[in-house]
Length: 260
Image 1 (cartoon, rainbow, N blue to C red):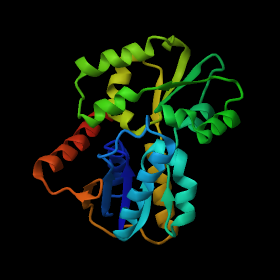
Image 2 (tube, rainbow, N blue to C red):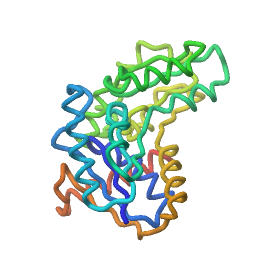
Image 3 (tube, rainbow, N blue to C red):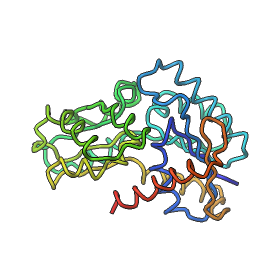
């Protein structure tokens, strides 16, 4: 049986990329809700409708688990999805916990970047309240990175000025860790690195999510049931056009370079 991956757009490819590396002997469905991306600026109820429609479609394909590879969708729907479906539904959240736990200096701060909706949702706010006893966590929405990624815009001349403008208000010398709390942002890890002091850690929740998926599959005795095949869907339409498939393959190649 296949494993389903879902995101509002192409951001979840960054998680799928890590899954294919860690679990190469599985088959995958990747569903990008390209007709409705981005989710971040939209009303919460509208986003919930899109997510439930997408997850129902994936479920009907006969999958053994679904990864909601979207922090925004996880923050507003994950508990309801788990209550509705009888297969594992694995969500994501910004990697605030490892960032706080690994913070070595009380003088250094943590910057959590994500979509505006993720940052203001109760799920993340409760997590920060629980963990951030020293009040060292700052929040920065970066909606422009989602828009750039969905346009396949990875040109430094376009993206770096946006990042510089957004990060300018922070004294980056005061930070120990930057959390990429939206799966789209991992495409730009190399550009964050150019702007941040060399000692600043850049982390996301991708590997932790895939490790959780692997643990669950092991408990189900459902590991290694495929051959690495990936079927792509855009808002429920199977992608068979060679040019579109090539675009997805190019994203995998970019991540190979970015993560070196």
